[in-house]
Length: 179
Image (cartoon, rainbow, N blue to C red; front, top):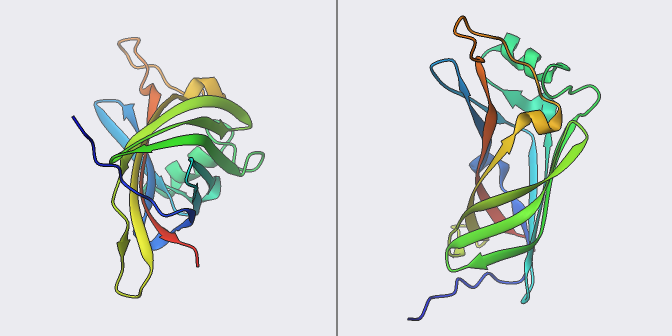
């Protein structure tokens, strides 16, 4: 059985921040709490032999639809934006096979770096209406927030905790090939 290899032209691919989204989901009370970051930089470097993804996020750009909750997420209870203004991700040896992506890497939150397995999908490169080469990259990772010192919680009357320790990171990225 043969597979079709998605061929990504070698080079540097930079994030189109207007058409991209980086967010998170975490179980909270009876549902899912979601947020996103506005100030994100991502770069995909591809060669004939491999790929590398590097990204940074400004903690101050977190948005959760309520300014009091946004301020709480920037406090020492969560991201501690004053002491740790950036979140970082780095994956070398990224596998781009067919339409799938496997990116074993490292994520840094609150100054703590841990390994993380990022998976996702990759679109075929296309040319946009202005002559730029683009591709889409959808990535997902799951982390235990307590491994990074993000320990805030509140007990419920049942004895359970209000906030899950498991956080899913979701990235819907459009990348443009650098000239």
